[in-house]
Image 1 (cartoon, rainbow, N blue to C red):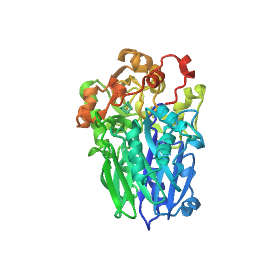
Image 2 (image 1 turned 120 degrees about the vertical axis):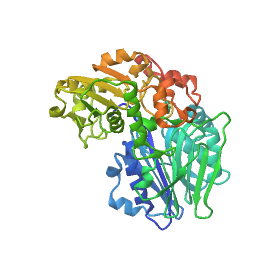
Image 3 (image 1 turned 45 degrees about the vertical axis):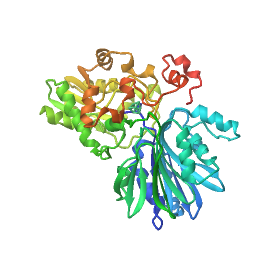
Image 4 (image 1 turned 90 degrees about the vertical axis):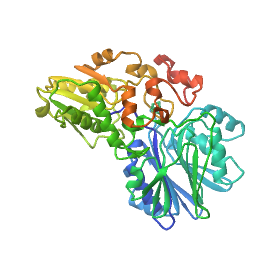
Length: 477
Ligand code: SF4
């Protein structure tokens, strides 16, 4: 349950002549809505003619039946976006469009580049104009201004220049391409819808339209689908690159029903809960989750401990950050708009409360206060991730380093701050073991500071600044 840990985006793409590609994309985005709630967009190509509809808001708010009916074509891409405060305006919503050799390309991106400034300066020197400041605009411009060759060649050239995390879908009038950075930080998978290729950030985007999962797009892989050649794939090798899927996708970002690296995330999260209990058992009466994302780990924790699992906090399903943007004062009461304690269940009970992470600590403190006010005798917090000590440069808007409570406080200090009876974070080894996968497959930088993709110093300094007063520094990556 987080308002301060946001994934950046979800992408979807489909090449399916003869099918309602806009509606299929709409459904795909619906399943990826958790990856971004501030804007949504769909681009469709109809015999070479590209049309884009996008706006701020949820997928269900942006699109209506009339719009979907107007978007007929052979292929489509879609995008849901989360943006950081202040940049939530229409110009930054995706897909972004640019003309290329008399054609139009549209692109949606999940991730974050670390060399945006350098590339943007190069393009500006070549006379390229920009409407905004996003890294997605730079990727789109690089592809659009690669005049030679086809779309595949232009994407290939762009992938060799851009650095950072990117899983993207791009389309022209006659082709759709899905591509992933050489580290594979953000997920992207390939599906099959009645013999037609589909790209989706997560397998849940395939499930919703009844597409079969084929495989994950490999790190550095570019997959193109068009009417002339069908499906083709090639791989861009980058010396020194290693697979580095964001381990937070396993903990929190991706849907529990999604499958990554052959693992259903619900099962992985249950194992995290089991491991949590093995690491830090405690005398207690009930295990309760912080809904929704704490649920699978709480189920695992209860199963391992033998302590009854129950709901102790009821989530208001209809509160959404798109509608509620509380100011600092309202945030104090805001948690009650999202969660309400089941007083009759928790009164007088020693609770094991399972959540997926603590970022700034304030939400957790309000949560613990609420449980104690509701009569809980003890609140033993069990967190299914290690302490977040380092900021993310690869597309997760979590906080600057100074805002991460675990970067400058011991576990005991955090416990004291949030007011819990006891606190245990899953160890990094325990987390790794829960995934059942080797550590060299993952980025774990927000826990151990070992960034797999080098981050330019000025960008790193900017994001890791300790003083709020530095906020005026030009920090746009
Ligand atoms: S730093 Fe953390 S949140 Fe960012 S990509 Fe790496 S593991 Fe994921």
